Length: 111
Image (tube, rainbow, N blue to C red; front, top):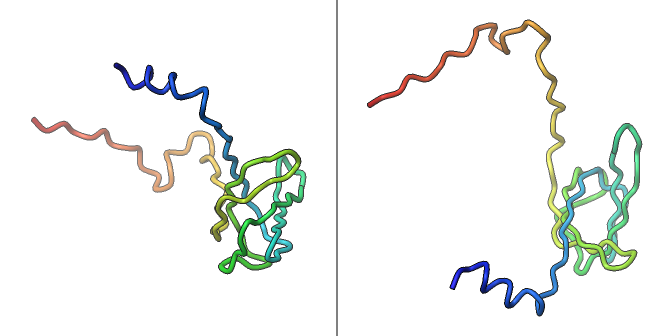
């Protein structure tokens, strides 16, 4: 029996919930809720989350990465961690040969 066959036999009894991730700056936090502000396509939006347990390692002003699931209209936090603000990666100017100005060298193969 293949694993896929086994999975398909048990799949109807399983309840799968989609896990989503959002990142942004914490603007409000309490023992039962978390609000972050994030930018999406040049627009700023606020996302609200319900906490099942208080977060002690995140505070207002921190950058946070939140894994959550949706239940009806609620976003339920599964995990939230402090995150470093990531730098925006810019592509090099056209005609440039990278950061050092030297063209990349192909790796040699060893037999």
